[in-house]
Amino acid sequence: MILLTEGIGLRNFFMTRFLSLLCNEGQVIVWHALPEQIVHACDHPAGDRVRWQPLPKHREGQLSYLFRRAKLTAQLYWQNEPGTDVVLKRTMGKGKGVYKLRNYLAETLGRAYSRSHDQILWLDAMHARAVRQSRYFVDFLEFLKFERPDAVFCTHQRSPLAIPAMLAARQLGIPSATFIYSWDNLPKGRMAVHADYFLVWSQHMKDEMRNYYPDVAEERIFITGTPQFEHYFNSALLEPRLEFLRRHGLDPSRPLVCFSGDDLDTSPYDPQYLADLAEELQAIPLSERPQIIFRRCPTDSGSRYRPILKRYPEIANVEPQWFALANNDWSKVIPTQDDVKLLVNTVAHSDAVINVGSTMAVDFAILNKPAIYLAYNPSGWKASDAWNIDQVYRFPHFNPMQRFEPVAWCSSKEELRPVVMQSLQDPQRRAENRRAWLEFLAQTPLDRASDRCVEALLKISQKHKTL
Image (cartoon, rainbow, N blue to C red; front, side, top):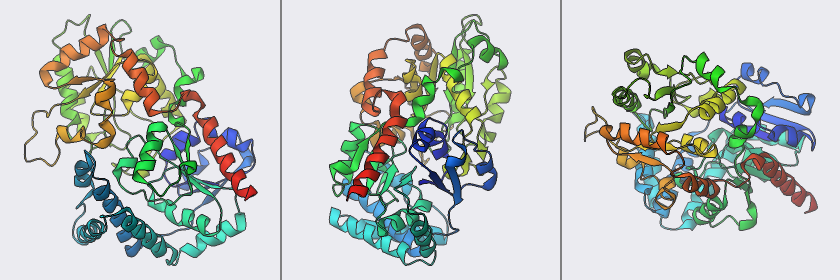
């Protein structure tokens, strides 16, 4: 049984080989929280071996919310590593009125119970108890009692919607596993989902699990890599360069730089960065001037970029092909197979990428292409702003960057032109650094992650059958 509570899980496990491989082992039930129109659009070659079943309608109760937020906060205070203060600042005090008060109470409770790992486990237990005592919990129990799957696999460990299903599986003795969705997730506080087993990207992420979750035994962690990068090894997705560039009004004789946008919280000044890049590159003679292809973050409506795109019409604006059910919310956007193809070709036919700390640097590294991280506060920024570029790179998942130095850094607007041109003229300058960084981040070979995920789930299932 695949527990799919957010659309972004589709990209990893339904738009790769994973689902076909899993269906070779038997019937697959997709227990989901997606709109019906999205489900109807998710045709799959596996056909009748996949059955879609909506999750019971439910809403997180006040008590379960309180303990979920408290354990997240307690974990951050307890781990207390470089950059944790930035994570705390980003997660605390959000909301207005009663919601702000609710978060304040959760944070106060979390701080009070952060002195030891045992206290965090108590908060974890209280969170589970609050969910089990909710009225909707019996619906999850009854469905799992009827289906009795070999295992329940959650595609995203941070989703509150997945909590009752995973707790019901545990109560019934059905093994549960979850996938750690992103490279930055584990340092961001206690995860929402209770699972028996964890699928992680790398040995580094396994070490993080053991550090943040000493209650999780080593044999409960499987190193699988992540299927999200498998698309770059699928030659069927690749278009001819000439065809791709001309369709987007680009000149095949000139170099191409991709500016990839972040979500609004991560980089509120992205439009200004894009304007800075366009302005600086305009000083280069036209025949040598790099072109810009712009890909916004799928959760971003794009409205904040419109003045810049109007001012610089030479920027090729390539819209992500996602269904957006709401803006600035990763749980409300749904990827499509068309966007997978668009992303692969954008990376394949661009010569470099520039952004604020995005994982797109990893995508480009896979194809051995340079990345540039923006590291300055742009014009319009004020010291009183809650956001600061220095804080972005203090998040714990950036700590290994100093060790590998896989990207170029741009510390001012004036550096944009020379840093971009140097990356284009000497793209192999950091090739070994990028390769080492990739091997550190994700298990290789990268194109076999789906196989390893399926193998892990089969081992988990077989182990419990034996028991």
